[in-house]
Image 1 (tube, rainbow, N blue to C red):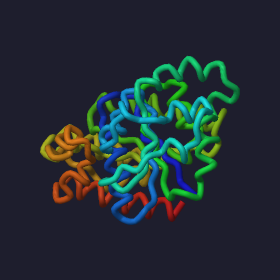
Image 2: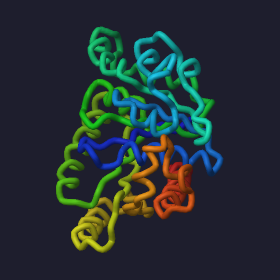
Image 3: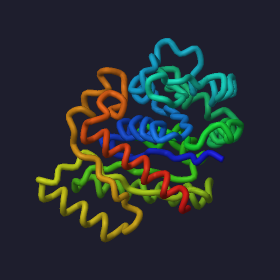
Length: 256
């Protein structure tokens, strides 16, 4: 049975897509069967997995409107070792079309149920806004992984996200919970980041992943080559941290 996790944060620019593609690649490297679902119309997770969003025959848009199945639309991201249910500009129009459809917030959940036995992990890259697309991700998921920078404004955004997750848990998806907070782009030389990290540990306890993803140039360069950092430069500090995170993720899922 696949474990479905949204990678979400209502604050933009916190490394959601970088986290999603590198966690997918890390999990694939340690032998897990992974499907990455790109729910962001910008299609960055698709391109960052080495899949050209412009040449997709079928995308997550077709799956959401019921025109294709996940098996039909998912493609193998060759060098990365995982499957991608890609996104392109068509997805922006899905917002309007979904409003008219029955069970509009459950479309992704119902589509993924068909491939439940095909994967160990399904990772959903959500857009930064709380839209019908994000809602589909949250309704399909068993939990949310929250990447966040250790900065003051990140704490404000986290409070908003926790409230959103509580509302979805109460009204639409009783299985939904925060799986953990992942500290990303971390620079231990900055006192403020260390202070915020300590605050997170004291407030959220074991919900904070032990792995910390450092600020790393090679991770930042990787998307321009259309690859996750884990594949682009496996020896980089950031790539090694994501492999550690993948191992921690598997251990956390097994203990759930």
